[in-house]
Image (cartoon, rainbow, N blue to C red; front, side, top):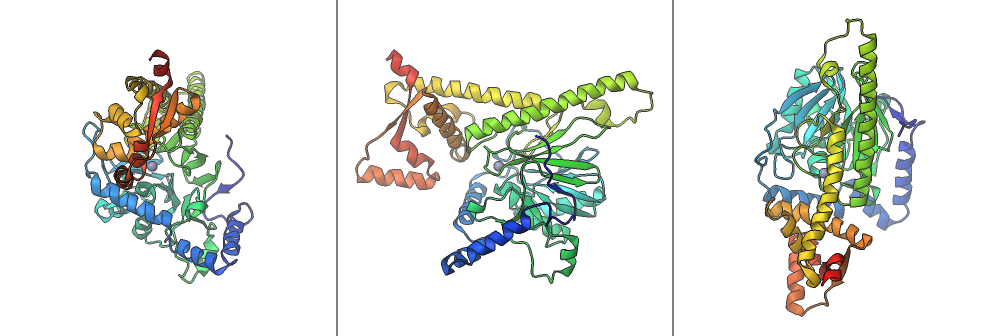
Length: 445
Ligand SMILES: [Zn+2]
């Protein structure tokens, strides 16, 4: 996909080239239509809506029930690492079984003003503000153009205010694909002039973002990033392609939570996620082709004066910078492995389901059978149930699995099912009433 015309260079006025100002005006029109919607708008403005409530409760739950240690078997990473001439990684300081070594955040560019990708989870104990300040000092970064968020999940987006505080800039803008239906608000990109004229009342609110659209371009000295909408893990998920220059050739991709190094990613929509993986694969393949053509040009036309930088001599394949885990040296290969893994998981689900015969299995039974030996109970509840459910939905659409709904039971079993639903955010409760039967097993029974 080629970059669209909406180019976001630092501090450039956006009123003519983008829909930011129009979108904000629309929001105000809607909110003034009645006192009820005005109240709703005020609550949303303050970030006090049910989605915010749910997100905060979910985050508290994760924090409470996961250890703050990285899982065994994943390598320990330094808090701050220079990964290439224009990428510095700063760990979010929030290791856990779900986040591995913690959320990776990236300073991108090579000048005094750079972009930051993702902001960590904002908890005090993560000490992210200090780490960011240190990294900026070490790499001579004076300020940020803005924060680019890959998606809304707490471990990526809740640290926005911490970044603002660390940079001493309360109006530093966060860019994200806006989920208006979830109470997030699109704001206009502020210009330098507007910044100077502000009286200090326009402090950014927590869920106010400059909307990112597919193909948006973010530039700074030493880097050009292009947004790629890659839903599936989350509906607003965006990867950023870092365009290679004449020196290093191939593009790299900041893959957010689409790809991880050390674990597979979870997703809320399997078909959207598979399409996003396909898109990433295409980006990596194109970049590798570019790299190999550059390599052959260099071989034939080299005059021996080429600068000996690590990027020119060691990177042969397009890199992937994931939000969790170390740098992936070959993004194309990992994406292919992810696609293959989903197919083999589907086969495994079907195999396990066949063992339950005509009786079928509940979501919980099947999840425990497939993942029970490899992850703990929290990951099982928070992540694996979702993955199994997505696979089963896809398989029932494909016709390889049939769904049997149980008649409602007596008062006691109904009450128990509701209690379990509350404890597991709905997944367990749903699972007790529905059984899945492998269609293949029917034929053999
Ligand atoms: Zn995520």
